[in-house]
Image 1: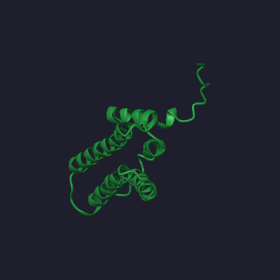
Image 2: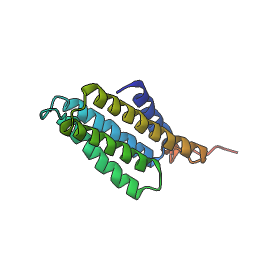
Image 3: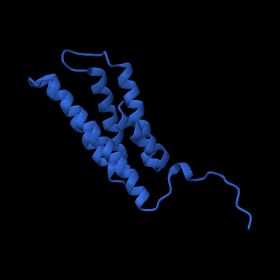
Amino acid sequence: MNLVGFVTYAVGWLKGGHPERYGVAVLLTGQMIEFFFLEWEIGELEAGIAGSQAVMLLIFGRLALRSNRWWPLAVTGCLALLVMVHLLVIFTPVSFYAAMSARVGLWHLLYLFVLGGVAERWMAGERAASRIGRGRAPESV
């Protein structure tokens, strides 16, 4: 994970609503799974990473269909392109650096979409999930 990812996860969790928190949890869990299955390779395919991203694609696809937010659909598109980059490496002679460049760019775009979803919530004046139902005692008058 890089600095942009860390900032996205922190801002999404602390300032986002329930869909943003769910998305951050899925992305963070997916990246931890990728870390543990990093060495799983089938020929040129990094099977552990591709499998993790394919599962995240399905989860975000479901979130995009059930949520009233725009950003899960954009994240689903980024994840679909990430999976396609993995398939492209298998079926065409793409250099390692070209594939890695595409993957890094798509991950940064994905993080930008999540941050955009949080910013939209903030600009609309909606409360963050971390502030909903805190259970504070009412202030005395």
